[in-house]
Length: 445
Image (cartoon, rainbow, N blue to C red):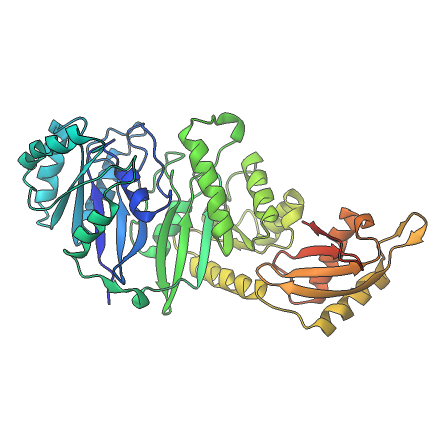
């Protein structure tokens, strides 16, 4: 059964993203007083009365975007309205009806869709009594008053939605087999890659750096499998951000997207050198033990002048902490090697979920220690007893030694490199923990 969609529409700064977050029960969309913060369609699936529906946040209708993306934002709003079964027309109780509200009302009437008029910022009796003026917009049949600031009206609005659409059974919701975070610096082609995979203009693609501000979740079906692509904001140098900068929020959304992903696609522009932003992203991916693919985009621009091997050597020197990560050269715009990259991501996820037999693991440990031991401590040899794997995603190994605090980080890196060479865990991060006989332990990245 198809999951029906409900789109939130309205002029800028009426609280659409605040309403989206209230309904979702968590902060997904960026909320800021600056007009035009939301550009793409942001979606989430909500459950109510045992059924599910998709809720879509859209940009402000009528906003004059400072990066000249007004037409693209309006196109995203129109697509959201067209695919939805119900519209939530949000207005502001404190400002009353404005000419732009009238413009939005005229816009949504063209689609002949059911509408619930949502009067936001009803924080007191005065605003509640003033709601009648919004009836002039022509949507008085279904009206719900909410206060996103005070978290009021959510239950009433859910009931209003459920009475106007057919909720899909919760069991029918497709569970993604893989969550992929697409990260990279500005203008590397992340949104183009998402649109190529989804087969539609799902997110705004523009030459303007920093177009995507929120992390946008896009579900993709391939061979009866569902993938969740997380399109993140392009990152710039943190020294250029301030705590009240919109891109400060975008950067932290990108970090959260990395943390909740199964595999990271680190997108790089083949025609540009890697920089500080790429280094910061690589460190964060490594710190979170995420399988990662270096996706070299715009390969068509350098093909014939460079080879994948050249890039492999170049990236291996720049990002030694991710030297194990595979490289995929693509052209997102031309759909070259894109599906193969998705298949590679599936292979990495499967590899990260492998649990090594204890006998095989300890055979590898014996070989590594014979090749090079961990040295000595206070004149006594550091003795390695055995190892065991305690977890997957990432593969997590516990190494039992007599002096865990004396094993250097350099030796731990050597040990993990050699362990990769001797097992099938060749292209994924491995987490190593050290433990002594008396249960002392220390996590090591």
